Image 1 (cartoon, helix red, strand yellow):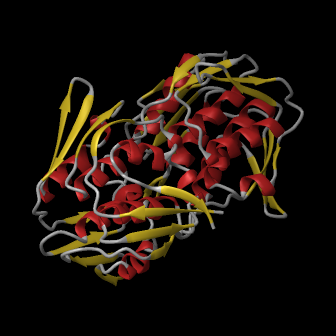
Image 2 (cartoon, helix red, strand yellow):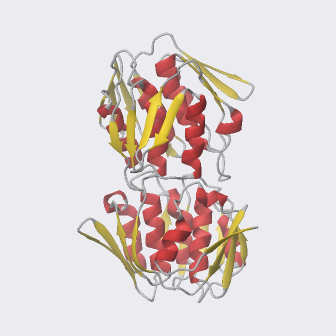
Image 3 (cartoon, one colour):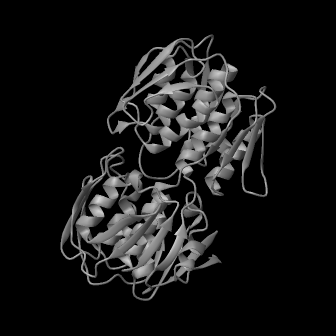
Length: 421
C-alpha cells in the first residue's frame, strides 16, 4: 500500500494534459458487450478502475489489448459466460453497468451487487426498475442480481430518484433498450456528458438514440449492433481537480484537452471565489487572486455543481476570507474528508448535509487518511498549499480515478513522492 509525501508551499505553474474520462470509459467498455464485432477505443485512461473493468470483461469472454498508440481493442469472442463475480465487482460500483448489455445481448446476466467508495448508500433499485419495465425478470440470489429475458420490449420509463437522476442506471437502461423491440423513452434521464458519450458510441455501433444529454432520451431498438471506433471525452472531474489545485496554490496553469463546456457550474462558482478560468484555443488557463472570497454551493445532478468536486472545492474554501456553506444533495454522507482537513488546521462545522467552512490563514501539513477517491484528491490539493509536509495514506483510492496524478502535479512544480507504507 502506497502513500504520498507532499511538501507544501508550492505554486503550480505550467501546462498539463487531461486524460480521458473514467466515468465515461467504464459504461463505454460495458457497451462493447452489445456486439461481437471488434471495437477500438481511444483515450481510455490507465486506471485501477479501468483495469478492474477489463478483468471483469475478460471473464465475460472479451479479448482486450492496447496497441502502441494506446488504442484499446475490445472483441467479444465467447458469449457463454455471463456471471460478473463478487470478487471482481466489489472493487467498484460502476461494474454494475455490465448488467444491461449482458441482459440485452445474451438474455441472461448474473451480476454481484456492487461495492465502491464509502460515501453513503448507493442503491441500484432504479437500474432494476428500468430493466423490469423493458420486460426483464429480476431476482436476487446470494448477493447476486439475476436478470433474464425472452424479448425486451420498448416502453416509457421514469428514472428519477430521491437524489436526482441515476447516471449508471441511465447507462444500463439505455444500453439494454438498443436491442429491445420497439421504441423506449427514458424520462428523467441523467444529463451528464458521460451519458452523451456512451450514446455517441452506441450510435456509431448502429443504435438509434436521440436526446442523450437531455432529461428525455428516446431509443429505437435495432436487431443488432456492429463494431465501431470512438474517442472518450476528457475527464471533467480531473480537469476540475487540477483547476482547483492551481487556484489553491495561487498558480498559473494551462490545461490541454479540457472541455470547459462540461464545467459551467464549476467555472461560475470559481469566478465568485476569485479564480479566473478562461478558454483559449481549446485550452483552459487558470489564474487565482491572492484573496479568495467565500461562497455557498449546493451539489446537484449535471449541469449543477458536481458532487465529485465537492471535497476539492472545500479545500479551496478553507482558505477563503469568511464563511462558506457547502450542501451535499447527491450523497449527504459524503463528508469523510472533513475530519482529515480538521487535522490540517481547517475550521469546518458539519450540520446535516451542510458543511460550514470558516476560512483560516493557512493549512498545516499532517498525516491524513484517504477515505474515498475524491477525498483523496482533496487531501493532495490541501497538501500542496499546507505549511510543512503532508502524508496522504491509502492512495490506492486516488489511483482508481486519476492517471499518474503525482507525475502530472510534479510536472507543474510540485514535489510529491510515492512511497510504500
